[in-house]
Amino acid sequence: MTNSEPDGIRLQKVLSRAGVASRRAAEDLIAQGRVKVDGSVVTEFGRRVDPDTAVIHVDDVRVVVREDMVYLAFNKPRGVHTTMSDDRGRPCVGDYIRNRDERLFHVGRLDADTEGLLLLTNDGDLAHRLMHPSFTVDKTYLAEVPGPVPRTIGRQLREGIELDDGPVHVDNFRVVDTSGGRAMVEVVLHEGRNHIVRRLLAAVDLPVRTLIRTQIGDVHLGNQRSGSLRALSRPEIGSLFAVVDL
Image 1: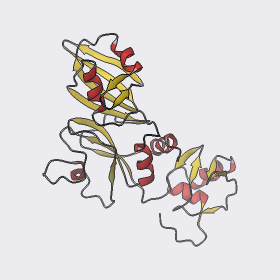
Image 2: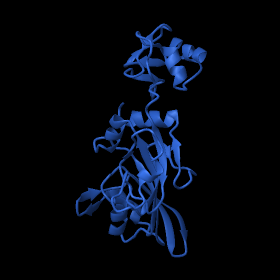
Image 3: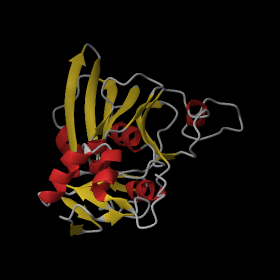
Image 4: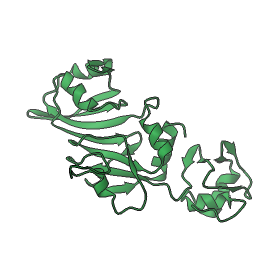
């Protein structure tokens, strides 16, 4: 958003442009004390802000007011490498965003054989925090493994498994479905080490056949088509900001 007004833009106009509410409804939010600018509640309608620098919250949820910021959910297909280019000519994430004007980068990685949710953005601050180990962002995976799954596996995974590069435990584990010699299991964890889900399940004799990441924090893959991109909603973006204290 380009600020052409030397003293900033009226707060209600900024909120309206960001899609929070109409200008009149934004004035109501301000009057009710539900809007914060740089950590302080604002109740006057004449307040002007610089959308390029102001940090604005509505109901304690961060609002993105810069029009140049992009936040996307990508359903990465199996066989696609998590890179923006590949010198060996293999399919990669960059192939799907070549026609976009923004310089986007991926938040974290999925190995080539894993499909599912990958976040793309040009917001370096948010991406850095989401990938930093000090911020524990839950990630949910759906894996196909040999079945049936022993009942003791869930407790074993919650208590922790010792891998070559240290211990790891899941935040949640459940069997979603069992049919014949296969089972679908859901794994929730906040670890970000390479191939962590595959290595973790292999350690309890459940080699992964297929693996899909279905959720990051409060952002869900849902029924998004493989290979497609979608813009994150305002609540989804706000939830990511909240989990990393932005």
